[in-house]
Image (tube, rainbow, N blue to C red; front, side, top):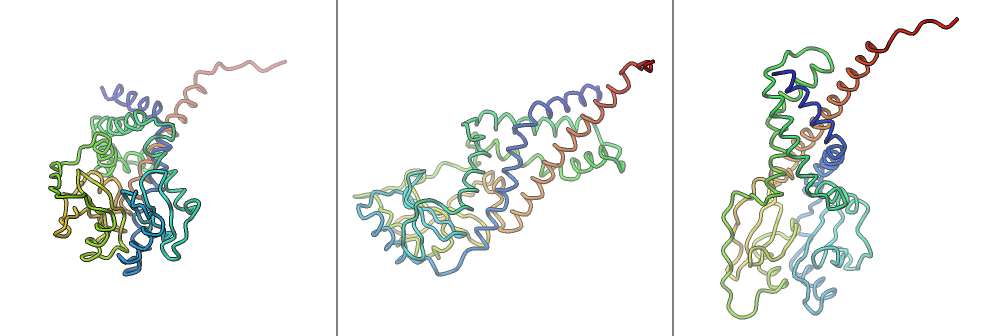
Length: 304
């Protein structure tokens, strides 16, 4: 039984090796993003007055329905999607394109989520494959840990098993929109819906907007995401102020933005471990395959 489990374990890894290289590699780079965001926050530098001025300057008609802020390059994006206008929050000048770092992280996120070519199904299948590999490893039983490549492979897998399982599992929760939260109640509004400027003014009364991540419609109401003590928290905005929304733990855990640098470090360790498991697993298979071929090769008679 163990022999067949081992064979299945190897073939699952080999079949999904290529997409896993991209998913895990980009995940490693993205693991640093929460740390970058938290480290770059400068308190009291993005005030409601500054945001309102930028909105009036670059969106005078009030057409935008969302804003986002990147603390590591001090830019405010007015509008959602790729059509948003990027503005330097310090000078108020419009930028023609994001910074090199922002471009890198955006590309890494697209690759991580879709493999660039909208292959979300393959990313999801690769996540299922990672869970299958972990399950097969457990079913093969507690290994003998030796000071060999195979021994280190097994020790790494068992030693970091909870992290190795939680990473793809939370990714699948995100793909299938499983949040373990109840749907937010729709906001009862009278008259015109809340504008971005109004939302900025209300949020800015209670919180420092320098920690802003985004502000947009969510579940039929205006919401804001802020960094607080290293955690990305989401609040519903109403005329009465800010109301904390339920935590989406699968996303917080998967993105590593629930405990600042510590959760980012956890994701870095997890990504390095999973890359290490993939590389050592494939190398073990290659080495054994070459040995078998060498043994099976017929002995050639020396030429005369």
